[in-house]
Length: 283
Image 1: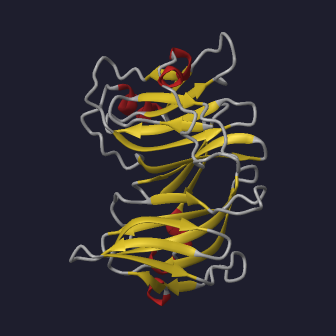
Image 2: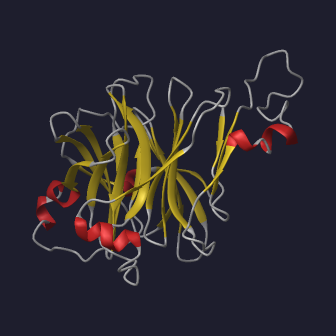
């Protein structure tokens, strides 16, 4: 199953692309793709952007539930944190649901358009991940104010807010200004029951990878480790049970891929580690 979320026309699509098999001449999910399937009105939904198509997508995430329902969460420069629920593609009479999420009455005013002139509010998400926790789907966001906000996709409420700056006591009193560029990635693991994240915090004078394990039920975040970055700009990164892989670019524009081989979760809790110790694998 493939999820396509175009960022120009604010249209979400839930396309059943099938699965690859060993007897296929070309191992690709697009082998049996068709225009008819892609244009089927049951598989797409146009986002209502208050009559305007000038909004741009800032960050987004998708998730496919076991029952076939597809979840799309995204934040736009218009100040909207939206959740779209699409029924399974083979469900007759299914209705697409669209919700706008807000944390407080002030945020409701900001995100409903009353005060939209101030779009870069500190609570604005810079990165989103949709993942289940104990069977229920949640929207995990890291925001400009360095806070992790967790939303329930069922109740549409913000159920937990955690200040990531609390995990860096050496700089807890500095109170850095809200900043863009923070990212959140799920740790790729064979253990699906052990939900962990790598949060990339971008500061005006540096950056850090903070690995955490949130417990939504207990309203707690377990700090696993912190990795200090270097001066290169981060393009993308990926984290597994024992590796941190980063794609960076320096001031001259040269791209470098680096890998840290000893990212053992749960064994070095709270210990700062320097990203400079990573091994260069491609230049």
